[in-house]
Length: 497
Image (cartoon, rainbow, N blue to C red; front, side):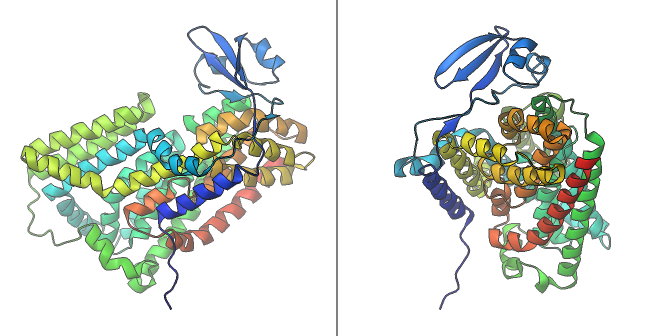
């Protein structure tokens, strides 16, 4: 009898899409009215069903709508997406999604996620060009020598640096680029690929979960809650230090077991396959000359430029993708590769990450089904109603769990903030706690479920290293339990301070 094999990432997402399609037949359709600001006319636009109303962009208008947010947050661009208006939820005629909607959802998702998909493919091409030169192999061999006996330092540095990116500017989707680059480094240090994935993915996850100055979660959520983003900052810094320390200790514990006995690896049966995938081979014959050093410098510079652009120059996917495309072309000239070979190598490198790109698109398709089925706002409405009459500690814990559940349906942090904060933040007033606690429950709830959320980035991340989702769950669940317990305790205590 054959043992049952856990489904692939694509199959898992198709199953989830099928379940969401069924939910649209049972969950009532409904929607909140939304309010958006038009800078060109300096007016608010209220959208109710299919009816648009133009309103004066003033504090008085917001107070009339029971939106406790300073009008400046709209006019200066801090809140740039439509927000839900409290108390305006109304049921609508059901929009159950059928079989045709189900099969079209991944296509719609791929189209909607085209920006990040092209970023992933271009990065794949860039990595293919650099791999062709042998620069990676030579650099990894030298790095392995430098770190010999101090490999744990690699875990601390990578996880911490990625977490700093997550907590400051929401370093998440961009991390996809680092898996094919850094996993070979961890393999050369005698760890397994799970350690590499964990350092990058968990670094990003903990950083964004405990965001401090991240404009895409902390700042936009605080604005939508009607408070200054610095309110509760020290508590989030404490949580960042606490959760990051726990996570690093957990990764090092697993990594040391693998290093001491490779058979303890959760993916030991894939050892040869993964090493072949990342082309671990003898690089002693490769001369690390000035061309390879310059190519590696240009490659590293592209990522530094991307980080500067996103955090300081208001760049997004188009600009990031352009940087990597230009870097690939310049590196091609540096390593003196012919035009035909450049195209073939670039396309081959892009195709290596095509599976990852498709996973991202299919995951976005799940969100499309919920939006078209008009069930997202219904889930939010009943979730907010659930917390009525709770005491402070129970309220904060319950809201964290609710946000974890909602993040399955709304994985976007900025989207979740603008949709839910105008509804959830006023609940803090009725319970007698600060609104920053609600902002924290939003961040921690999203962050905790992000560790395992199949509609987030974990499946795409695992696909780079060909690691099955079931192996990740075995690795992450003890840490997930520890972080959940710590988070709920800290939130409960903070609610009474």
